[in-house]
Image 1 (cartoon, rainbow, N blue to C red):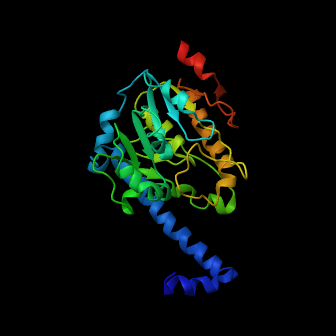
Image 2 (tube, rainbow, N blue to C red):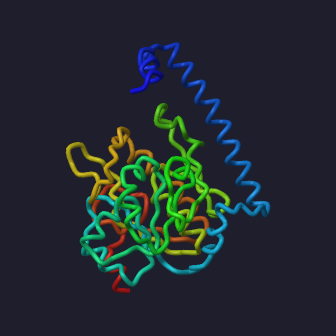
Image 3 (cartoon, helix red, strand yellow):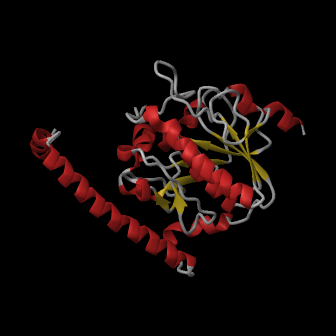
Length: 276
């Protein structure tokens, strides 16, 4: 702990200090949020933002196709991954730690949490990806591989949600303009998948539960989330937003997870889906 942190530690819990700190971060976050929205409008109006230009190669590239977005809940199995080799698939976060146990590789990989990235950066650097989508915010903290495709990630609009418990989500169907955080990388990949043209999206390993004393992921990233207990509540808010968008735009999102507690989307049996 450096000198600055030691001094600030003294004031922790002091109401005046906490109110000052909250006000400071509100002001700073509003400025950042305004900048994010202004940049999104520029891209919407034709501005060629080179750091995100590779995203445009994927716009409607898979129009009308179906895909599987694979989260890392404890219900996920190697057997199920093996069944998806002939499907378009997205994988997230610590799924790459399973690569030594299977030949399965997702067509697309996604990561947006800088803490998760930090915990797995050595694994990421030694992994070969077909295509990897990465939140631009991560590049501010780490050296991201050159072949990673950055997306403009906006989580600032709900920066204080965890503190006040007032959860909300926005949805974007244009990943080049903006990708709104919906409390999980799975949510962001739903936005990106829709931008890519997928009309049928299946979620797998999306348990949406963090039971105390039980395993939270099929394989852990190494980052311990101190807010994990409230994650399912926030995630459901996000998924409801995604469902509302999908329902009003002729897009189907199904939950093919074996078990878990996510009931926002219609449940389907993975084996029956793959047998069609």
